[in-house]
Length: 233
Image 1 (spheres, rainbow, N blue to C red):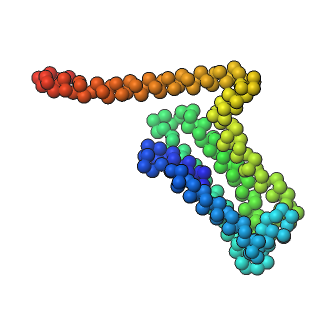
Image 2: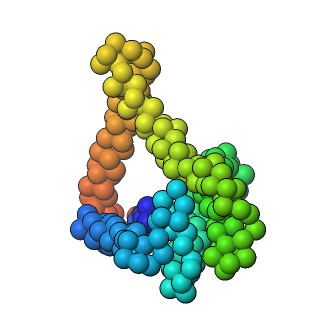
Image 3: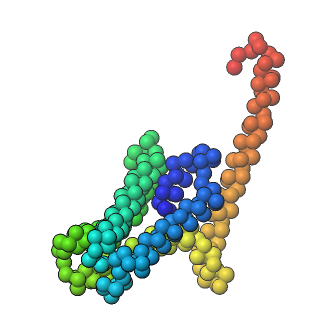
């Protein structure tokens, strides 16, 4: 859901009427939570079971309904991964500047998106492959090996996401340095970030003021030129 929202925001950045509002975002998140809650409650209602293995995952496929539930759950995760890949490819093609095909910013964006997709793939691919084969009652590994696989690979995405989406970003480093400067640490870096913010705000303010002045002067110039039709610029 976060990836789709990011794709929508970036691809429609200049169309304010297409911007996602707080009410829409809240409705989408509520729908997502209700869907996940319904999928998680089904094993408690007799569809599959959490008691099959000690990992508290729905691995009971004794009945056809339980087997269909587990297969549907796995295919849902595979589909979510494919949606993430497609959205990031669309985001890259949207932000890439065609006039400078070899610029460093595009390479940096591509590397960052590749890391995000690779961590998702590293987490989901082994589990989905062996779990789908087991769901069709053709297990390729034993239950003991599947537990080891889950312990090693399942947390990768959850552990990596805070670093990839927040901790490794420039905004987080700036906020962390400013917060630590109030405690007497990283004061030089915090002052540097404050200076950069102040300079960028002044530049944006000067650009906006110069643009408004040029816009206000333009009608006067047109009126002045219209009063002398024999003069050609």
